[in-house]
Amino acid sequence: MTIDARTASTEDRALFTPLTIRGTTLPLRAGVSPMCMYAAVDGFASDFHLAHLGRFALGGAGLVIVEATAIEPRGRISHFDLGLWDDAHVEGMTRIASLLDAHGSVPGIQLGHAGRRASVREPWHAGAPLDETDALAGNPPWQTVGPSALPAGPNWPVPTEMSEAEIAESVAQWASAARRAAEAGFRYIELHGAHGYLLHSFLSPISNTRTDGYGGDTAGRIRYPLEVIRAIRKAIGDEIILAYRVSSVDGVLDGGLGIEDIVEFSRHANAAGVDVIDTSSGGITTDRSSDTRVRRGFGFHADFARAIKAETDAVVACVGFIVDPEQASRMIEDQDADIVLLGREMLDNPNWVHHARRALATDEFEHWDQRFGSALGPRLSTLQRLEESGETPLTRFEQYSGA
Image (cartoon, rainbow, N blue to C red; front, top):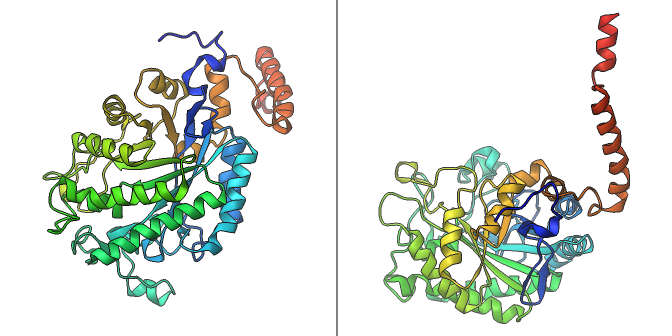
């Protein structure tokens, strides 16, 4: 597909075409991936979250997904994660969803349970498991849970193997959190089923060595995730988009899940009520000696997304070093994915979508909020005039030194 960006309108590029899923239309195909900020207290959203997420809506993103939000306290990654395990959390989340919606973005949220990878420090403290030092500082560790009593890696605590009664309780907690998310106004709900967290740990034979109905063969290992999906779909009804983030490969030397396993799981998830498969990778273990995670490069999950898109009926989203507007649009035009999600790139440039419109077509500032666009248009004209005249920001200083 060849398009001359010099004469094209943004509507000619796939990145800027709408996408309707169930009862919701994404105005364009570029969204903001969920990114943990470690800024919550007791799970509550704050003004920080409102400002942090609101800037992406003002920047033109079609979808903004709130960071991994715990379905129960012990499902938090750290003490500072957002939560939706209590009705009291809904009010703060409603403010966020309302702001995103008011500025043209579909409000999304990722629900999660960190499982055996919970109870850790923030990433700027290496994401290490909490210990006595943290307890003395007021942030004690807690007992983690998983499908089996297997630690996430060397020097990690051993989780408690969940009983069947605890699994049933957990399914209900997922559904309750999803109901609260819908009540808050989120129209896109994503389940975090990747990176070694609870859903992923049940799916992978690396972390699930159970011998009951929730382990063993593939049918047993996918049982818990599918029960969660069905319970959530029942809780949120038919109009809200349900997404599921997968690790497309486990990324370990021996015995882990490969893309063919995830394609098969994606078919089951889609049949159970999932609309969107969000492709990531890795995380099943913290043991770097057996770690064969996908090498980071531009669009490094695109091959996985393409395989899932080609072999399932699900809408497919892709993350992973998507940084360039042409790259992003080509991924959609060439059938790698239906949606591209940007994380760190949006942190660096919250106006990425607006700049992408200018980069790909003749569109200047008409899609910006008029309070910004009316000021930026004259600014651009002045910059162009000065560039044509040969004047630079340092011209006056060069004149001084020349004198």
